[in-house]
Image (cartoon, rainbow over all chains, first blue to last red; front, top):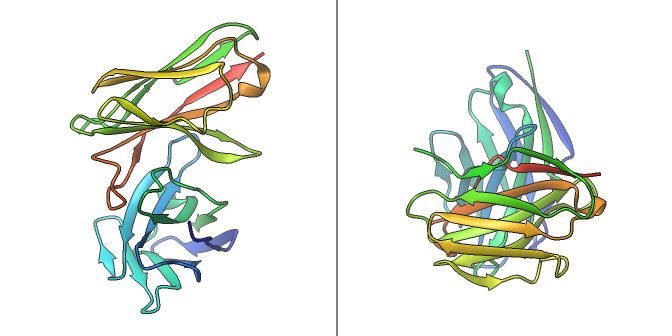
Length: 110
Length: 115
């Protein structure tokens, strides 16, 4: 699987949009970008995933650059409950397990 | 909708005892995964099943670990005998299939402490 690089931590003010970057410069054409988050003492929570088009659901938006070498997860109106570790994962067909890196610890400030 | 249900949430036991962790996947999901999370190694895939059949158990650390899925709605992960280094949070996840376009959904885990 392609390696991902994320900043170790980020702060965001409550009510503002949180933009979490991820670099995956070695991504291949058949690899998907997934985002999960883990709130303390809970299991990883699926947020969103995409191949090459931008995606949006009720939780977040995923913006993937045209060359697919990086992506950004956007939480449009961050709340205190969005404080968590966010993981960007590149997943290739045939690799059935998810490989979690260290992620970004997002702290929402009141 | 009910998510993935794991039990127990916490388990504390003495070294040498048998430990059984349980998982109920989301109804209709055909794939089930067992992961282990530690501070040192992060999240690791232990084993996964597709249609109740074990597909890849290469992540199972030793023969002391075994997993079964007797039916589509239940799986167990057993450690016998348990050792202190098995202390970790064990997660179960399920997905509609093993396809790369199918997200895995996780339970809240079992926090296992072996004394």
